[in-house]
Length: 238
Image (cartoon, rainbow, N blue to C red; front, side):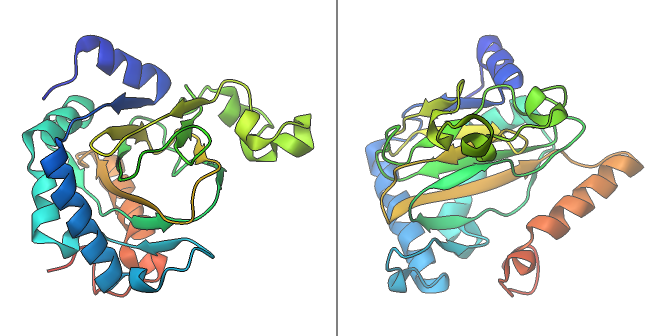
């Protein structure tokens, strides 16, 4: 699969895109089975009690079958359209989420560099924990980045709950959908259950110039499992 010109323009302009039902029900079944095995076996997910988020980094690396998602022509086509054919995989997290996640971005880069492909494995709506995004907030000239405002401070600044910050978009998803967004895009979720299943694949542009290689190095250091407290011996499992 490849993005249409309109889809690619939308993604670059607003910093996100939702692709419904990219994976069929039989594919969703094995993806969920493999995900839960990884989280329960390697990430202490079998002890998840809903009091806090349970997370593992990396995720797909622990499953030979989940690793095939990196070679899936639908995923490869979309990622290549955005980042180029030589994009790199750079780990990813797996989660049983619990409660809200406040507004945040996963990075700040001077140019398009890193994207997150998110697999949400439960039906999620605007008030039950679906991904919320702030359109255009990935742009360096966005007022979310150049001004003295932050959506996470909405109640203090404007007397508005974070879920009601004007302009935010709720990406309601079903298992089999993909949500893709720039690391720089502000995102959040509100009203979710105590066991929302979700995992990600982080993909980045390959470093070519000295500056680009330094950016990749910095990214890997920040997003590697050890930086999140997981001591697997490196960026990737065997």
